[in-house]
Length: 117
Length: 108
Image (tube, rainbow over the protein chains, first blue to last red):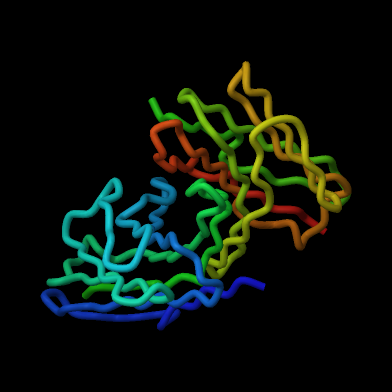
């Protein structure tokens, strides 16, 4: 079974703090994604990565950065946390099949509920 | 207008009822997913469709590419089916677009 783990289920930080959210997958997937989920807004893509050291902005990258130094690990960084970044953060991964075609099936981690005070 | 619309937003039903959740989209897609999210946040991928119909246990997903519409059906619903069901599409320009979800509550 694919396993995607996130470093924390619940996190409370103060405004202005630097926050690291870690995601690890154990299936050698090329693609990794960070989403945030807010009531009434659904899931929104923040950043994704299709290879080590590669990253692409999603729909709402402002206020976030990412790091992918190893294939299995994708980190989301809040350089200076703000209260409007209080949200549920979900990591996902998928693999690229033959010919570079994505299989599309994404496997999600359990989520990190971040509260910024 | 959202590119992916789900209906209903909320649904409460009695145990045993046949459930239908709908998803309509306005963009060209290469694939459509149905996801299930239980209280506590965990998301499970139920189906990936590009055409036709798929069945897994009591769950059936259909897609009509011409009408840009997909349905998720649950037969003999059970309280453990209570969750948020999310429709997501991968557009031709490789964007992933999510619906806002349907909150399903099955009463015992």
